[in-house]
Amino acid sequence: MNASILLGSDKTGAPVQLDIEELLATRLLVQGNSGSGKSHLLRRLLEESAGMVQQVIIDPEGDFVSLAEPFGHVVIDGSAYADAEIGVIGARIREHRASVILALDGLEIDSQMRCAALFLSALFDAPAKHWYPALVIVDEAQVFAPAAAGEVSDEARRTSLAAMTNLMCRGRKRGLAGVIATQRIAKLAKNVAAEASNFLMGRTFLDIDMARAADLLGMERRQAEQIRDLERGHFLGLGPAISRRPVAVKVGAVQTSARSVSPGLMPPPPSSPQEMEALLHADLDEATSQPAPVMRREPEPAKPDDLHERISGFTAPLPPEAAPEPSEPEDVEPLLREVLAEMTAEEGCTFQPAATLFQDFNVRCRMRGLRRHGLDAMQFKRRFAVALAGLGDEADAAELGEALRLAEGVPDDLVAPFLMIAKAAAEGAPCPDDDTLARIYGTNSLGRVRRLLEYLEKMGLIVIRTDFGGRRTVTIPELNLTTLAA
Image (tube, rainbow, N blue to C red):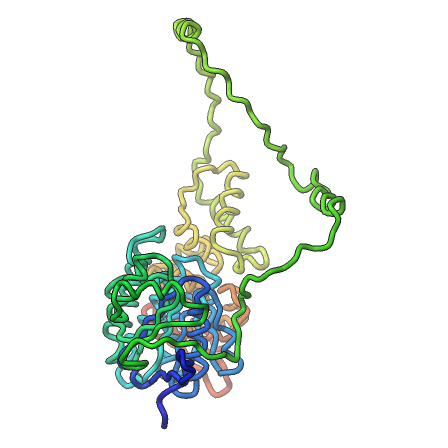
């Protein structure tokens, strides 16, 4: 079997091959400014090698999801899964050799870094029997392995950088070959960039980036100027998987295209100035309740004599009498339970973001005269989960008190389903069905419900039994409680 793909052609029109088998052992770094054709190059590599090797793509902009239908990749929306689920999916990808695209465009930068770190760590930590060869393509790698601290949290940066370092430094022995693309090498952590032995350098303009690219390609500094003159889709390549000497590569055509569209010329609509003015001013009074900003003239500077007179004659105004603060209720717990019960009774409450629910909780408390309820966002999330499970005043019972203790080690998004099962077991009631657990979890996917039950069972919190009639019972070993069959 030929292990090479046709990457493109050189200046003479001769084909330039990329040896995939060699690439698996030596890794690849792609650099180029925005618009230089990095994504086009990666797409060419992915399309040509799709039938040869497993592919795992970290896609922060969602550009590569168009590969899914023609080439059989599975798209994983990072925003739709919890942390634990991402880890389980990463392990299963290695086990089943699935080619996947982790789309992170629905997440903020902090969440992107954390999700990618969990995902890469799961690939890296797979058992040795699942160390099959796989290309791991990371687009915009400077996001996940930044050279310096930015506006993201230190924790997200550390975990993401550690995962990228493992991929590039230690991934080869586990069958993982990193292919990383970045706009600027200077923005990429050095210990990540240094592990690549193959390079494809596209157009870049900053002197420091040209100098580093020339060094990596084994070119003299005076030759670095040609990197600035490269056309879109043209790269200089070097490495054991490409060529032993620097070679100019014009990347070949691709079959698919990105969702994003390159900017092009578009004439304005053929409207007259009067029509456009009418459109811009239509219903302007209704569209905004704020008055137009008024340009305020700066006062003229005071003369020294006037200023001295104003200062000497200044008399401090008497402080206004402070209004008496409204008294707080002495016992806030009944009010908290009342508010939480009211919120959990509303249809669709579990499908709202936690921040929205917390804001609604604060407003409802103030409407009842309770300004200081004493709960932060994380404490509210736990109390809301307890209320969702139907544990109000009953939470003081011995069995349910132990269940609350067990729930302290459960991820936040799984607390409500776990406590609902524990409540059913304590009452000797049937196990909640999948539809009920899906509603309280905040999902329409019954598959996700089954995955969360499997996760709780792996944690040792529950034991699931299903008889031949398909009826399910759930046991909580530490509480010695079991639900009825349902």
